[in-house]
Length: 219
Image (cartoon, rainbow, N blue to C red; front, top):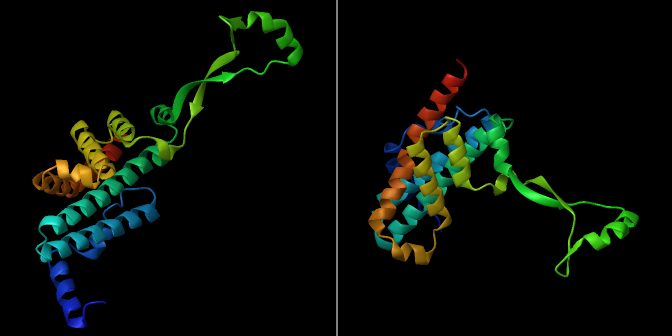
């Protein structure tokens, strides 16, 4: 059951009084070349801020505060991942260092005609085991399967973000993937609150560093 209109007005007024303008949030990621993605991330940003202010207004403590922290980390880590992924696999898709993220060494079996195999058969055995003719090749994996720490490392190597920021972004992403009850029991609430706070605060240096990188690239 929804709040009555008066209660909803009070909640919205409290939240909006402590947040920046909606247009500012929605345009925050306008440094991205994909405007649809930029708009979607702006919506994610403002919705995350609204959720945080709601919990703050509730004076969240204990288990409710843990829920607040969990949502913050989940949302901001997803934003960071989307930004870095876009910069690498869209804007810099042709860069050899980006291409290498989806490549891995592998071996492929050589297809040999049956008559040739009959001749080679006696030579393709060692210690009672059949030897399969192979050649070294390069395999490809999907972009979505590239680990985030590898993406962050690549972004750092390309000069998009600084090393300290890359390290923290990886920390946020790993925390997002490790959010479950057993992990939370081992960590203090103070650490989790600090993590969520930093996850929000790093949006500004992320934007500044990306804009600075673009400026250097156009010189």
